[in-house]
Image (cartoon, rainbow, N blue to C red; front, side, top):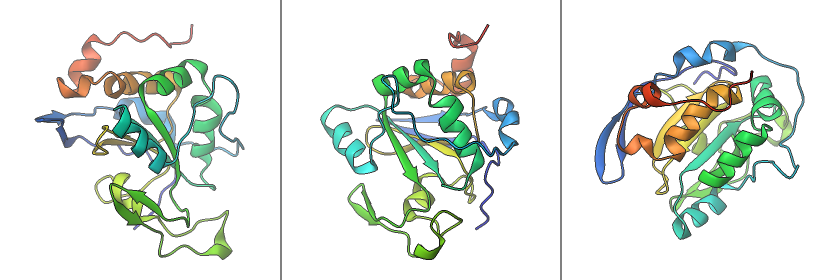
Length: 212
């Protein structure tokens, strides 16, 4: 399988909503045209007061069982330039961080990690992980294939939205600014996906994060 960091791929997928069968049309492609430029920026997830409170996938699953909320999973790699841009320029935005912390269980997952995880009762590993290649391109984790696969293709970064039962709602590939991510977060964080498709939602959405 080809890995193409920074590649922008957005698909229109059929998803199953809770207790209903709905068609989710994700017309995100026009938003992602600027997501193809790699960056050499080095950044780590912010640890300031207004930072996103990242969890492991197991922690998020346990929390969602106690108090249901959707999950937002940042699937990244250590060598991916656009992934670092997402940390430095998007996830560091205090407006976005506040909304994510309130409406999601945010998870940061290394797509090429050698650590096994448990997801929906299933142990998932990275059989091709090579300890000698830590910091560079490595094998792909089974969880990455399970949740971040878009029409058979893996790319980084991919932000995956899941419902509180850990069903994948949509994997969105490519770098996005806070303004570009705002409607997507509200669509899933506000549970609008249960009653309308994305295009209909965008017809009524009024952004609040647009920079002057």
